[in-house]
Amino acid sequence: MIELPKISANSHIFVLTGAGISKESGIETFRDNDSLWSNHRIQDVASTEGFDSNPTLVYDFYNKRRKELNSGIEPNRAHILLAELQKLLNINIITQNIDNLHEKAGSSSIIHMHGELNKARCIMNDSHVFNWFEDLNETHRCPECNYQMRPHIVWFGEIPLQMEDIHDLAEQSALFVSIGTSGEVYPAAAGYVTMFKDMRKPTVELNLEPSCNQDQFDFAIHKPATVAIEEFKDLLIKNIK
Image 1 (cartoon, rainbow, N blue to C red):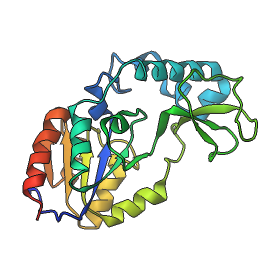
Image 2 (cartoon, helix red, strand yellow):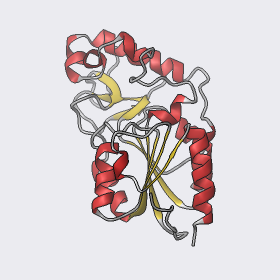
Image 3 (tube, rainbow, N blue to C red):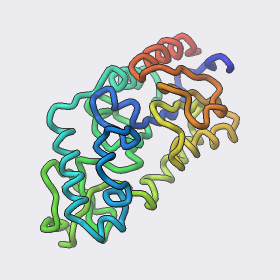
Image 4 (cartoon, rainbow, N blue to C red):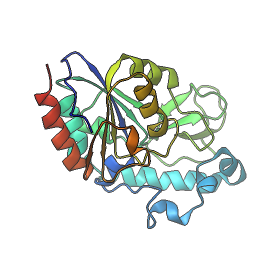
């Protein structure tokens, strides 16, 4: 692999984060065999078909996740390090995670491409999105148009949010950094690293283990996110030109 490239102080850096960065805060991933997801079929709780056939199950599933998130889960050192880097460089975080740990750590430029657990939206108008910290069920109605509400989550088969904004950021960015993701989800880790390779821009992987598309990364640190990001931060700061 090549050395970590030199980065100018005004460069934009595209940081994609996945479940691996939040796991160290105690948030389970759906790929873990003993996780919350292991008791549910993905299509039952994370698809429009599942919601249509059994909305109560879906509401209850995300109500439990929301309650767990807001019951004391805090950002870990990895989230805090990214927030610190954002004070030195133009770090844009595009996260697959639906938690609010990047915000709680102090990061500001964040796109939640798969939605947010602490938000709900109208089933008829995607632009009617509201902060939501309580349980959600069939009785709740959109304050704007009185239609039923659903979790503000991108389910399987749905298009991720703010795709045009994400694409624009990719074109502006000088470096792609993938953190805590398996590389299997498209268009996130599976697509953006290819985009950056096509643009001949350097790519970095920070992950516990090599991802399924590890051959597309120019530089990698394979350690827990809290350790990998600490090492990456130190290297990146040394390489600011």
